[in-house]
Length: 281
Image (tube, rainbow, N blue to C red; front, side, top):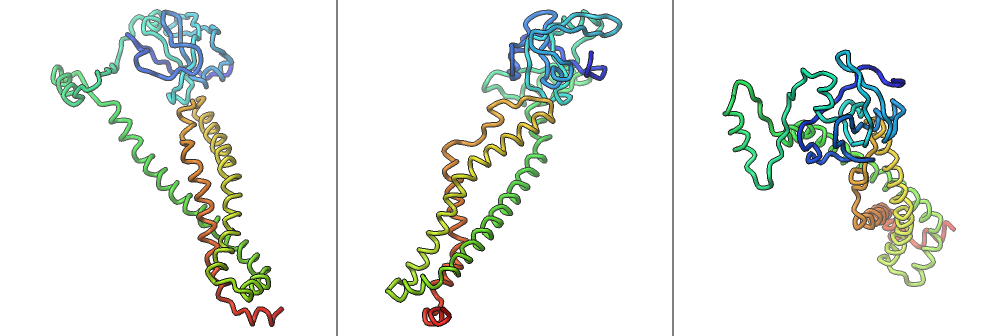
């Protein structure tokens, strides 16, 4: 098959595999012999679409298979497909299941069930909690990503604060004569600080209104690129992680950063000598 390296790893299931709740991206889950669901990368590299058929060979036998759906999988970077066990056994009748996945009813005691199954044949059975394994494997990655994200957020906030500070300082120095005149007419130092901070707040509002939508667009592009590298089409529940109620808070954070960065120039404008400023002008 053009575009594919041989062999391709395949998963076969016996029993009601649709209860595993694997996410189908297009089409449906297989329901009979000769039907397969494939990873997006497999379909892309094999130049196939849902509804197409292809020939698969194993143990000297060849069988025609029909793609009835595409599903989300990180197995072999998406270059894989799944089928019913009877379909695979037509190609190689000697194949037998090697792994059993058991879905317990809500409220079941997982540890007690695992202990009971393992004790039934301790020399032949190895019982593991799949959820616990996934959590243990991904915990270091999750912690590392969280640490990196915290550092990135802090660095970006500092860069934003420095940028606002520089802008406000330049504007304040350019308008130092106007500020001195208003202070001569009775503006208090507190109102002077409030005026400068308010001008910086406008920068923060503009940054929030523009930055939040732009950040979301960049985020979707980056996540989509990561999905392509993993051989998958990422679904909405994976991409759409931002609560709409949080987005205004993110925009308000820009205003807060701008206001904090403007405090030092504002205090300088409020404490500078009016006489010295007027003389210099």
